[in-house]
Structures are given as C-alpha cells and as structure tokens.
Image (cartoon, rainbow, N blue to C red; front, side, top):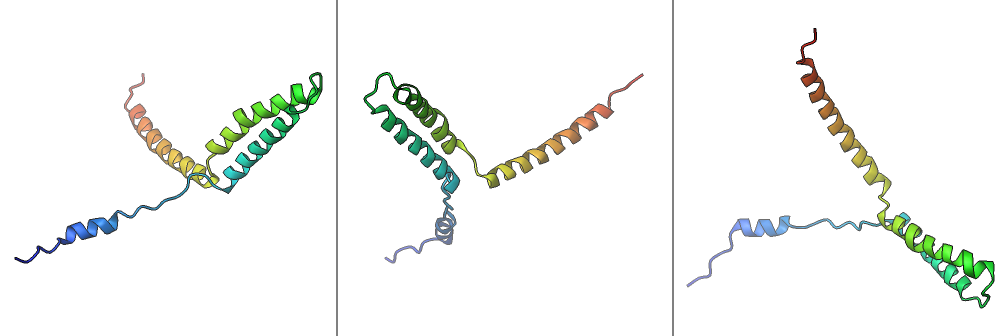
Length: 113
C-alpha cells in the first residue's frame, strides 16, 4: 500500500499561521523604567546612611522609593507608543462620526409643533 498524499488544505493552513510578533514595550518605555530603577538605587543608597536624624535618609530616600515603585516604573510599563495612540484616536473619530450620523437621522423623525 502506498501512503496517502497530504491534502493541499493542510499544507496551506500551516503556512498561513505565521504570526507577526511585536514587543509591546518600546525604547521610550525602557528609558522610563530605567529612570525608575535609578531612582530606586539612589533611594536605597540614601537610606543606607547611618544618620537617624538626617533629612536625606528619613525624608528624601522614602520619597524616591515611593516615586520609583508607585509612579515611574508603572508609568513606563503602561505608557502606549504615540503611533498606537494615533491609531486609537482615528478609530474613535470614525466610530463617533458613524454614531453621530445615526443620531441625527433618528432626531429628524421627531415631530415638533
């Protein structure tokens, strides 16, 4: 017995399944995250000073750590690229125009005395 030849549909579906991978973070995101990490390093260095009554270890260092952990690093992770923002605003404008057109048509059917 001879083996059955593979159908063309199976072969073509395998070649069509190639996915284009794009990393969600760009260079600007990594720069912001790097600034946050630098803030953390400076904060931990200032906190390591042995002065209990000093201004830098008791006030500035915790502010740097909170700012790095809670503000700068999350902002660097969540910030969207400008090109993606432009695409989103274009899509929103198109859907707004379509929605506005249907509202105007519905409003014209209302009788006024």
